[in-house]
Length: 446
Ligand code: ADP
Image (cartoon, rainbow, N blue to C red; front, side, top):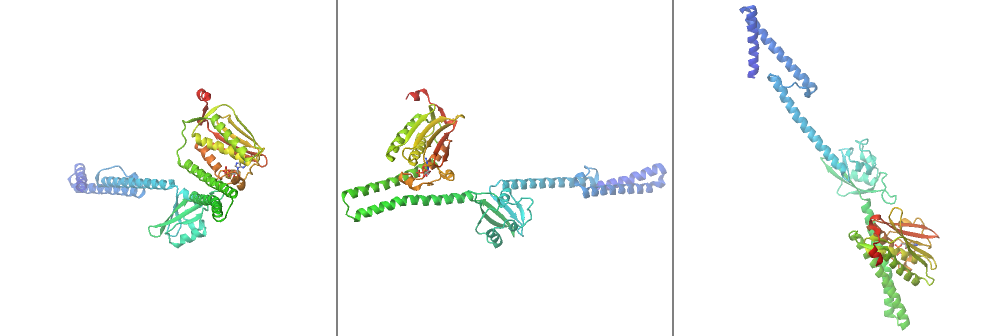
């Protein structure tokens, strides 16, 4: 302010001095008056300029000029710059939050007081089959028409979630719709936040667990019931020695069946719970094949008087890295299945060879009844059997191929099944190149 008064007085004084010097002393006051008017006009012009700039765009404020208007402009500019920075930071934070919510595997939808979509992430959009931009401000209940969901949304009682079929095209298991759990959380008065979670695999796991428990109970109950019946007979009926020993033999069979089942269950749970097999423990394929042959010939002669035409052959002598007992169990299982399901006199060919891409294949080809195409994808499910009675008669548990598949996967390999009804089946274990090597001279001699 003192500067303003000083410049004003200076302008008047200069005006008066100039007028007196040029026109004479009589014009002193007129000059002073003109100087003051000029100062005022200049001042008004600068104030007007500042106002004009402020009205349009504060960024165009003049850089600091002299006087109160210059200082005012400078202060406004600093203030605005600080505000702009704050806004930018807030915007960046908001974008980060939104990006974090976008990255969430769960769906998030924000609804306004009327239940219209204010924002939703891509997960929710995908699950509900809506468009995150086009459907903004649409009523969610008009887009997701599942009656259970609509009733839940309207109830304003959100203590529990609601489970619905996902309205989107997303498919769950075997063509069933994906399942969604939706829970609403009210916030800021009547606004609502919806959280969605794809629980398809959870439900599947739960259903599998239930089926598994039911299957195990069923498998164990059958021999148990038979055993209990025999025990009762032995207790209550006077039997001669021959009958007694026949009953005891049958009881032995049933208890053996239970033992096999429990052993297979334990094998499966061990496979699921243990670390991957060691990549540096090498076993000769020749040794594994030899054991398969011993077991196979023994089983064939036990099961059928005619026996089977069995042949075992190897192309090259390789070693495989992994757990020898697991590998043996997988290979023997396939040989045993071929023998058990192929009628006596049938032909079974077991081969080991290196495929052109360097992977190794252990294959068992039989001339048995073959398997219809619809069963093939399900054969490795636990307790899945096509011919239940044949499986039981020959001591099957329905877990063999599930174990084989597990072992193959643990060794980085796969189980391939090809079959033609009436002609026979081919089960092959294919192992990756990384688990194979040429048998060393020392082990080849051994
Ligand atoms: P199981 O103990 O009943 O043999 P697996 O898991 O080993 O159980 O096999 C599942 C089902 O696959 C068997 O019940 C059988 O119906 C079928 N299967 C397996 N191997 C053969 C084969 N070589 N030929 C025909 N059917 C087979």
